[in-house]
Image (tube, chains in turn blue, orange):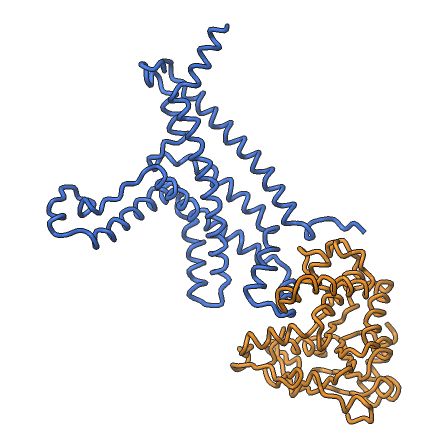
Length: 270
Length: 264
């Protein structure tokens, strides 16, 4: 019995498992940054959609209608690669001399000096920006609708007392919008959380990749990882993780809702 | 109307000339001119759709008139463009002028996300940029004046309609307005709550504040006003002191209106 316990303790705390545990930070980081960016892009998109100027309105509408339709996996693969190559191309126009280009044997980048090496931190940020862009399009729609739900009289009073357009927007309109936006934004947040399971597509050794490796039969016999196909057990751990995140998120959104709804949702007490 | 009242010699605070306003094909105001002088209480009466609320909302440019001008303290509010795209020409000017016009709405329009005290302090702090300590002392004094000092830290939706409207009046008072604009301030209230709001408005009238009041309440208009203006289909049909308008009615339409009003 104690031998068993010692085995499992040793098994679950070996180096590969510790790396797996540590990789949860990538998932959590991508969710938090991606979610925050989605809200920021959503605010920008909704403001564009509400703009007085037709070109800005068109950009906002284009963003929310087109990007929502792009599959997230596809955008996830497309955006970081496109961004990386665009940067490399830009750098190449500055640093590549004809000699350097002649010396380059690979097709891309044009010369070795223009090569941009992306490590996990860079990929993580690009992944978060991709999440923000894709789900920001959903948030744009949610926030646009929420802005329209704020009673007109609230804005009219702000204008009547001499507030500038930006004061009306930030002090009254956006402040009161959250209570209408939060139910929709909590959906967007859950989509972002779920999409974090795609991080391994971008060479990030994330929780899914590690679960896959560690669960595979005889992954690393030399360090004692000898067993049958245990992937389903590892996937089960991921299920539990995502369920816990879901429950915590619901709690978090309830608290946010109470805060944003103060004075708007509370019952009359007189 | 040139009456031998002492108010005539006072400077005009609000001057409206030849105001026209249409919503689509519907012409709501068809050329209205009037003045409100320092310390004067002017009531606008008339049936629904006579244009009285629109006229009031043109004073602070919540509605931009198609034609005509509005001047506050002899300063004309600058507009540009042609109807229906006529708009405010100078954002800084209108914000400065609005910050001296205390508007009270039919549906209160207290900012729902702010406490009563924060509602009253908001415009003095963020528009007039006055120091917080001074504003807070004045806000509390204004809330005491309208009789809801104990509600300072409640949210608007925790108050009765009458209390909300009194808070809205305190919000208007705290900007030290040149003119108070009341847009049917008691129409959304039950009769028993109406009284407490009317009492506060009467108090302000007696203080000699300049006020323009749109109302359905003929009895109140008679008791509080220096001058009453009867609007009919976008034009001034009759104008005079309360005694002239209610006691010696000349217009047949006004007689009909007053008759109908007294039966409701």
